[in-house]
Image 1 (cartoon, rainbow, N blue to C red):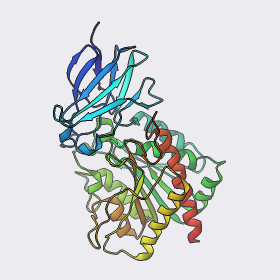
Image 2: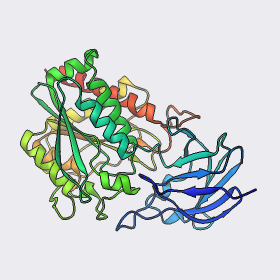
Image 3: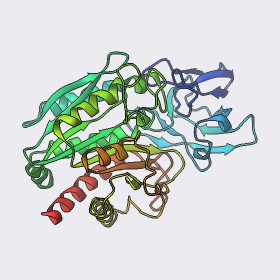
Image 4: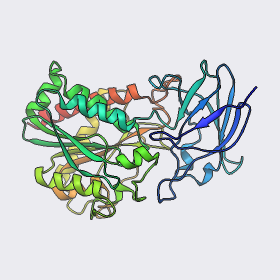
Amino acid sequence: MSDIAINAAFDSGNIVVEEVSGTAARLTIRRDSNSDFFQWFHFRVSNCAGRPLELKITGLAASAYPEGWPDYRACVSEDRAYWGRADTSYDKAEDGGTLTIRYQPAGDLAWFAYFAPFSWEAHQDLVAEAALCEGVSHRVLGLSLDGRTIDCLEMGEGAAQVWLYARQHPGESMAEWWMQGALDMLCDASDPVARRLRQLCRFHIVPNCNPDGSVRGNLRTNAAGVNLNREWASPSAERSPEVLAIRNAMDETGVHFAMDVHGDEAIAANFLAGFEGIPSWTDAQGDGFTRYRAILDRRTPDFQTTLGYPEAAPGKANLTMSTNQLAERFGAVAMTLEMPFKDHAPLPDPEQGWSPERCEALARDCLGALLEWLEERA
């Protein structure tokens, strides 16, 4: 029988085919544009109906986050709508660190990805649908290095300036699934929580901060190989026009509450990171973050506070990162939401792991927590 065929020449595609024999393949991941980062993969297998596949992605000990591979299961879809998880194992001693994916498709085509992709076309649909909703306006904050738009959706009549932004790291596609959930809720005129939030807040929502990296199939960087979440202290038109455009818009509006939405390769849980260590830290500002985190923890079992990042020491916050920069620059209650590539271990799902559907549900809980947080302050 003929060999399977593997291809990644599409939006957010990333794989290098080293060898194919029958239904087995040896693969590697292409590095980010102008960068040494690599971890994101997304490819299609054809000529595979009913055939047991064995796909080995090698050289992963040198990837950006090798600790992300143990206990990870690859995402797989045959219709590109429902994403499940394939049987996956990792052997750090095999061929420089090898992830082995085993799956038997029902049909002739199967797509595999590090997480369920959110394509640039899907982004266009998301922005178009939201922009048509009553009370929603759209503006282009600027252009990426490749000339793609930095889209911002705005709504609400309240005094609280709320910024929600995602995919500074383009391979963290769960962040835009979260954005889809947030926009679906906020644009729903019949949702009472959304209606109240729009009364209290002016929302500024940037679903994709790094469109070039998203389309190119990068994990962490833009077209110039720049990690955008290390550019917030001094963004430039040459290196990071995406951050420059967003931060300039924030300077125009001010920021009271901000959430930067991300994914974490290694930690199998959802968690929030704050702004401990900023030079202008006040207990009142810190208490605002702590209170929001506690509300979210109470609202959903898909969140927890045990696992997360270590806190920065006083005065040692990295102000090149957006959460720290916004907390310092505006006195905002700012935070980074991290979702897993693996699963939310406190409440695992054997079929899908952490999934697009759960990203969207978590967004709704985050917004519900925001309303509770705002009304407690009033």
